[in-house]
Length: 295
Length: 301
Image (cartoon, chains in turn purple, yellow):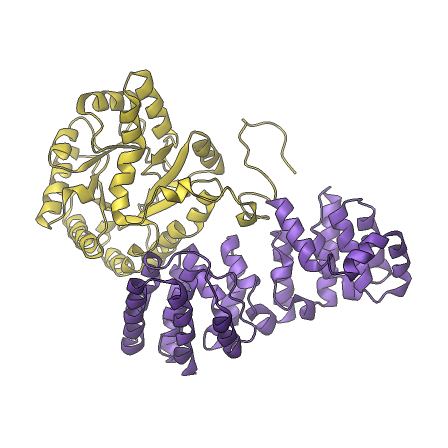
């Protein structure tokens, strides 16, 4: 447990790559105050005021720094973090690990946080101590309708895929679809696909179709491992939309599936199969293309 | 471009936000105030303050409006002393947050002893965190209350240029300006100022340190009061530069002293980003663009 404070140094190194000396001095002093006093007020104040010293700009993340981060946190994905998030994470990691006080302080931070403070806290879940006791906090956080905060938990964050029970993970993925968030950025989604989620995805697609609305193409990724006759019918319906992006998703799902009778239909789309084989068509490329067209 | 430096948007609809954006309002300041219904628990204040820096800021951003706020315990609720004491303990958690541009709105309502006590405590807090102060002047016994607010601010060593005295009228404006304060004017039907009176004040006193706002809230009020008053000023022959100062620049200059408000926040804002918008039970459905026409009988799918 003591390691959280030691590991804060990794985040200081990341700050040092991008921040000026004045800001680095400021945060060093704040960090020491939090660590030595164990006083929650010094964290509350510096956590807010960090925005005066660190901007919401992307971080350099040198290869060396990334290697060190991954040696300590295998799945941590920092490429979407901004400098201010790194600074706030550093400060939180300085909080002494006396459990009762720690939770009281952290709960207060979560409850009173502004948009960007919440973003920082939720994205930092994988590096906080007492991981398994933070699961309810993460699940509750997903009830937000603020996409910035939702994204901090659901996207490029290993926490849900490691800790969430199936039902909660499925709720998160469904809400991500509902909010049209990029599914390819949900970490370990591939591993956590399950028949219940495939069925939920199908029902959602049917509901959209009934309302005369489009279905987000990435949704079919959830179905791929579980294709049977009935899913096959839906996928062929997607192929019939004549919308290239939708068709890419349907061919990829059929291509990945184990439902042999369904594969015949692929013969009609040799150029799609070629795209899949040479890597031009992937779930990531489909998701990216969909998000680009949407903005 | 306009700034409405005093509006309680938690009480306003999405139609208002759309109309405000369409009328050219780029930034707003939401002062912490009372909600009509008196609060009885400190937790209600906590959630309200969190709303000001959280959900409401997000909601405004979906309409391309940059939202700032002020934090404070209002004078009416200062009279519930045990509650007010708890709110004072809560405030330090919020005053340092991003986009908090002043301590306010604070001051006097009935000019009671309790109001005086918490007004003074918050003036000290503003000095400590180096934020401007937004003063709410009372509806009743206004002139005396306004003068007393300034006397007390000076007693606590505040620099008048760090203080915005709000809800002025013809009876208070001269002394407020003469003493070096910013003078806010609220264009609010029946209880405060009408826009025609505002035009006369700008004609008489010029544009320096005069700030126009709507204070639109849950009462009969107008979220477009700032652009409407600007138009009336133009029609009445007030120079464009004076219109710009009183409906945009002076507010920016005053509240930017917080270090938390910067023109670049809206001039360089990312274009309305659909990926930041919400589907489902939120304010904009996925892919839907804000409606700018009047109402019709067609509801978008």
